[in-house]
Length: 354
Ligand SMILES: C=CC1=C(C)c2cc3[nH]c(cc4nc(cc5[nH]c(cc1n2)c(C)c5CCC(=O)O)C(CCC(=O)O)=C4C)c(C)c3C=C
Ligand SMILES: [Fe+2]
Image (cartoon, rainbow, N blue to C red; front, side):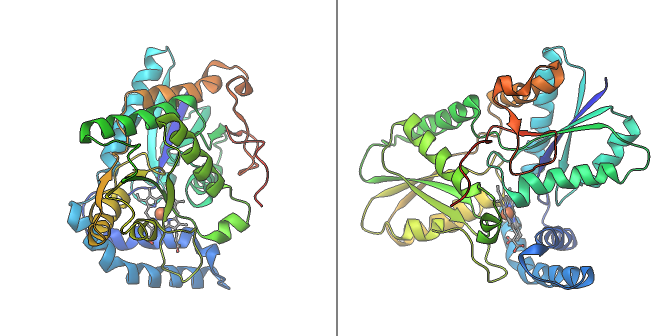
């Protein structure tokens, strides 16, 4: 059987080019159009274009500050790492990477899969903490794009949340302790406050059943115990484009609230598997300025996008579907955030959102 694996990512422009950034933003806002009530598809597009125009100047500034995003390069390297690990294990697979909002776009990659006539497709979003606008939306986009291709009906498997995979927790925890050692930081020092910074989400998505905030909390608790700290803070990096409610507290408020309480903050960007504007600009430039303004030194843990254990982790997660053994043997069960059969994760069986 010919198998195609698709790693799914958010995407970001590699160069700060206005037209490209505007199209990118319009796609993102349209994908989240359900956050507001539009009567027609045309109204949804109009509103998305309006929001994109409004956000364009500040996002252009962010990309100009970092000379474009390195996300694409890192995602390509992750796909190559996975190919090599699976090939070493004796599997004959082709690994693609596709982006929700930037080339290579998901529908274009779906067309390539059809051209190659793969019998089976395995989708793996590279978002450790499963969320509706990222993990679920990217899988839906791939499955819909495949369904829309006439005469092409491969078997479709998707893997959603994998933050509970043991190797993932280990590599993340070691990333933090290695960084602390390199920087000469004592994480037990009462003058050092540890902050997990998660990408925020609109509370509407939580009310509709997403458990993203629970995943954030349980992952923070686990990593804190692995690195041996009792006290820590959680903050969310929110986008306030639509005047709707997002997860609280904001990372910025958490850090500013530490004025006079500590000498330094250590920030772990827990939602990301790539360095991109959210880490390189929002944390390294903007949050550092906020921290310094209240007398705190800021240290930001690097994202372990090139940790050599990451391709092993992804290969282990995919292995049941390649070798044909029962996914529940590896604790992979039918996903409850996405009910379509063939969707698996490590998060099934959690109590429902309060
Ligand atoms: C590479 C960049 C980005 C990653 C990775 C990313 C992850 C991520 N995003 C959400 C939830 C939302 N993000 C939304 C908008 C949005 N996200 C990015 C960039 C990344 N997000 C951009 C550039 C934008 C649009 C412009 C902006 O506000 O900056 C939205 C939609 C908001 C809306 O429509 O009003 C949601 C929802 C999560 C949970 C996440 C997890 C890793
Ligand atoms: Fe986002």
